[in-house]
Amino acid sequence: MTRQRVCVLGSTGSIGVNTLDVLARHPDRYEVVALSAMSRVDELLAQCLQWRPRFAVMPESAAAARLRERLREAGSTTEVLDGAAALADIAAHPDVDTVMAAIVGAAGLAPAIAAARAGKRLLLANKEAIVVGGALFMQAVEQGGATLLPIDSEHSAIFQCLPEDRTTWHDRIDHIVLTASGGPFRTRDPKTLADVTPEQACAHPNWVMGRKISVDSATMMNKALEVIEARWLFNLAPEQIKVLIHPQSIIHSMVVCRDQSVLAQLGTPDMRVPIAYGLSFPERITSGASQLNLLTTPSLTFEEADATRFPGLHLSWQALRGPEGSTAVLNAANEVAVDAFLNGRLRFDRIPALNAQCLADVQPGDCGSIEALLDLDARTRAHALTLL
Ligand code: NAD
Ligand code: MG
Image 1 (tube, rainbow, N blue to C red):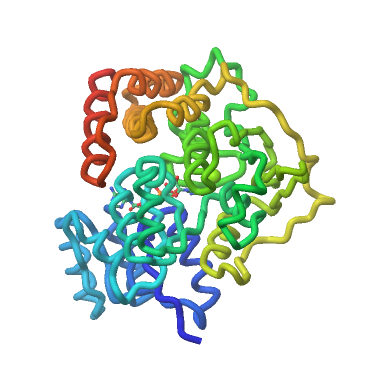
Image 2 (cartoon, rainbow, N blue to C red):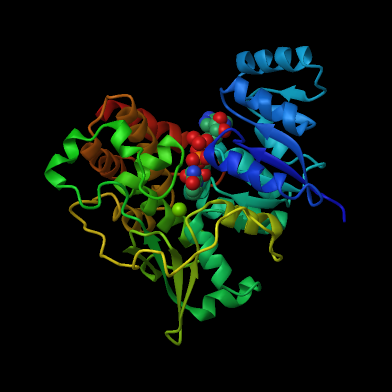
């Protein structure tokens, strides 16, 4: 069997590390040709020494220079690339078959679109890329002939419930139900949300994840981004996407078919399952996840998402009904808000308000190119900063 040549963008993050864990179980099927990280030189160095990729990418030249030096000292032949375009170049490289897009935030937009245009097997964890990219992103997938595989557990669940032939999806689906754990503050008195600290917000009950998505899970802005992600991945109308709180995170999402048959995907909460599926689709490989035992699992329960506790959630449908580009505005505002919260400059309960304000204030305009979208992203960030 020829091995799939894999590029992991964001290899030092939570998804990146889980991806390498799955890849390590299948050396006969996969080869790592490129790794990338933003700033953690020591971690990327250790990964390079273990995996011996042809390329390592660090966008910032100072960090890249440190990595280059350390690799040389260790006798490694891995080539270090840097600069603004290096991530997109590696994602489209002819010697790469599969790209794991696991960068956090809109910073991953250009490399994800580059992989799509180059017709790669594109494993999309970086939900912000599709939330910002929207129609342009899906066009790139279409025109490039890429195979787009969702890694977000909810979207992987929906994808696993649907037939391989995409062209029949539209006629089968009545609606989908994205499940949400409700995060760490599902039962906390809403009046005390003003006092939430970054440490409390990042302590998710069921998943260990990067800090940005952890805060998003606590505000449920993560689910808002996932509603938008689902709209594009499955070509659904906003009203065909529903959200249900399911605190045990065992049912990862559901498809309600035209005939009212409900298909669900279940499993222990472990991101290696959707990652393994993305890597092996349409086959199945071992993932390292433990077996689901329904006899020892706490009872599965469901609740409605409380709009007072989670005011950010509904901004997704609002943005989807707004002018094109509104979802990019929502994402940029949220990235600024989360960063400000993590740095002690914004109260936790002000995050949704800042997002709503930006959605009301910023006019999207042109969304026809990556440059236009990144310009809109920058304009929104600048505006959000003035509101802090
Ligand atoms: P993380 O913070 O743990 O890792 C992010 C990675 O991206 C790191 O390797 C970092 O070096 C790199 N990075 C950060 N900023 C960058 C930039 N400006 N340019 C280039 N590289 C940059 O995040 P994570 O939890 O692994 O999440 C990654 C993506 O996957 C996010 O979009 C998140 O929403 C999504 N996701 C994560 C999980 C999860 O369980 N962690 C689940 C579903 C979806
Ligand atoms: Mg998810």
